[in-house]
Length: 178
Image 1 (spheres, rainbow, N blue to C red):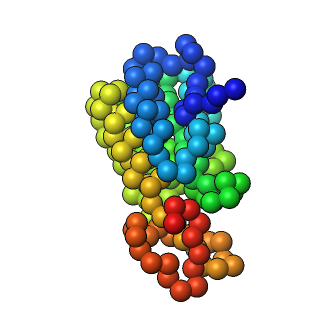
Image 2 (image 1 turned 60 degrees about the vertical axis):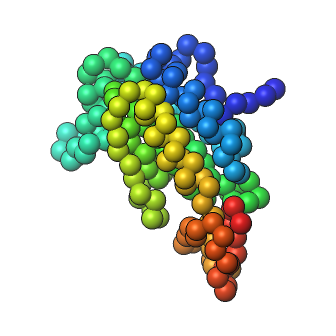
């Protein structure tokens, strides 16, 4: 059975989400060290009730979800797990969430997929058509997936990115994309 990047059941996506996923899927085929099984699509239908704390502060991310659900639109999240070079350990989870005409790209908690700044990954917010957002999300994922990652020997955290072509610093080892 062949698995594709960002695979999703036919009919689960709205036409705008289908266009966006198609653009990101096509680009993902050329990403280094990103196999199809490292990607996922999460769809949150507008009729899903989310528990929330009424006292919790609402940021732009949460507000966009509320607006999309109020308009009867589903929210889409694309997930990419960056794996250690042995492909068993997930070292970072990235996500791109589309709510209405808004895109939110950031590092994510690997258990909840909620935005969670852990490293120096710069989050990104954009608005536009599904096609524009697909290109923006693909560019954002591709730039991060292509980075080389290192760690100190025998100390799995913190990991850090280094520019392509950088020599391996003393006492470090490659984690991915050497």
